[in-house]
Amino acid sequence: MLGSIFAALGQFDDPRFRRVVLMGLGLSVLLLVALYVVLVWLIFWLVPDSVSLPWLGEVGGIDTALSLASIPLMLVLSVFLMVPVASGFTGLFLDQVADAVEARHYPMLPPAEGAPFLSQLADALRYMALLIALNLVGLLIVIFTAGTGLVVFWVINGFLLSREYFTAVALRRMAPDEAHRMRRANTGTLWIAGVLFAIPLSIPVVNLFVPVLGTAAFTHLFHRLARG
Image 1 (tube, helix red, strand yellow):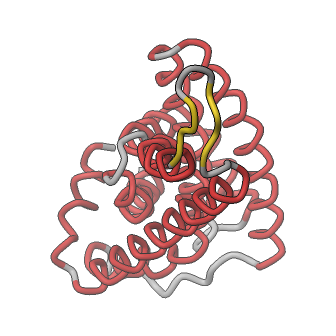
Image 2: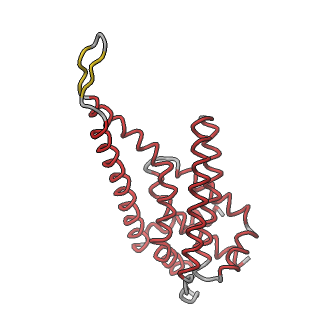
Image 3: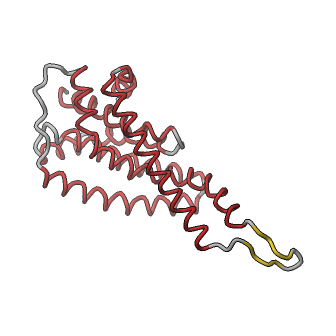
C-alpha cells in the first residue's frame, strides 16, 4: 500500500503525469473560485451595505466585511467540496493517469479496454448517492463533535475514496462483477489506503493534489493485488 503511494509520488517527473496534475489543479481552483464568486454575489445581494444599530448609529461596509470573512469559510468548505471534486476528477482524467502509470511501470500490459458506459454510469450514480448521504452525516458529526468528528470524516471518506478509485481503475481491465468481487475481498487494505488520501483532503491547498495521486496510487494497488 505504501509502496503504491510512493510510486505515485515518484512519477511527478513524467511530463504526461505533470500535465494531468496541472489540468486537475486548474479545474479544481476554477471550481473553488467560481463557488467563491457566487458566495460573494449572494452576500452583496442579500446583505445591506449598512445598518442602523442602537448607540452606534449607522454602520456601513457590512457586505464587504462579510465577503472578506467568507475567504476562510471557503477554505474550510473546500475540505468537504474536494471529496466530490476528487470523484469528478476520477471520471475526467482516470484513463490519462492510469495510462501514464502503466506505460512506465507495467509496459508489457495490453491496452486497457475500459468499462462499458452504462456500467460506469450506474456505478457513478450509486456512488454519488452514497457520497452525498455519508458526507451529510459526516458534516453533522464534525459540527457537533469538533475535532473528534474529523476522524469520522476521514474514515467515511476513506471508504468512499477507496471504493470509487479502485472500482474505476479495476473496471478498465475487469468485468464489473469481477472488479466488485476483488474490491470486497480486499476491503480492509483498500479502506486504509482510502483513509491515507482522505487525511490530506482535509488540508486546504494540499487537497488539490490528492485526486491525481489517488488515481495513480490505486492503479499501482490494483495491479499488485491482481498479481497477488
